[in-house]
Image (cartoon, rainbow, N blue to C red):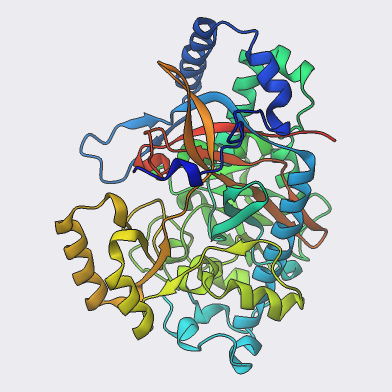
Length: 476
């Protein structure tokens, strides 16, 4: 969509064309390179991705084919000082999210205090009554979190949404870095960039630290995947391999002697920590969806008996709810006693009459999202929508206003991408990955930068045609 370029912050150049500090060394290097050579390296990077099999499925595609996520060779760079600021804000937010989830499954103090409407919990499909009163091993609910950030100015980072269910994309962060180091090794000797390749080791260590009391000194970790037809199957297999963990499907697991055990060549062996990439609904057919063949019958009983850790904990999806998101400033202040270090995007809750009236009157200027939506689906971007699309969405809003929130159309920051005509600015967001255990909060330096490849577009989701970049955090 077209946007007002005067209001857009470009992360590489200022309005006068000067280069920002973060990009100064990269810009100097870039000036010595031939554009044709850079294009050749970009083509080679694409071939590398194809050989490696770094693909994803798009649900609902008529052809059902796997797709390659477009990768851009121009990195997204932030300084060490900028990253420290982000780290503090992310740490505060994730700590508050974990405390919030614990509270809503126990005393619901935030509801009793009148800071959050009770119906947002009781009428929320992501709230699991089976988790009420239960304390997961180590008190951790959100073992892996993806926090989606957008930048709107030199010192303005905002949280767009929280991903506390089964955040994806970390494999692309790792493969993007490996590809850049293979294509441009001299860059990494010239510019000091913080590494991300140790993420799988840190993930394995963090998950092991969350093992239940019945675990041995060397907890057994496994990754539960829905199978090869899942859109993120490549990532499931990649992470299991990189962690040295077993990749399992529901059919590989069963209850044996009060433990969840996996089938091996030596018979069934108990698992201590299950990093699940299966949604709550399909996790246990005896507790949730009886038609599910993806989960493990009886796993919730073993979990509630404290004999396995499930990461992330069932019921954490309530923290992904966009209506809950609109209360995050209050949630952070309630549980930390501090003002939020990272702001939220202004949000109108369409369940409220005044907000709904405003949204309907200003639909052309707003972005409207489903409260349980993800992946860029089920949303309306007002400025790019036709009159017919706006009218159809207004009808949806009037019919079920509680299902939607609305936000202003933000002027997301831009970073250059390599196009056939040379470098050109495109809008980006950033998903840092956060590991949480009783030992503390560990944030990988950088994360996944998603980029809108179409000129003026604000849609960065890979399922909607976006691509990815390597994210660099500079050393001090």
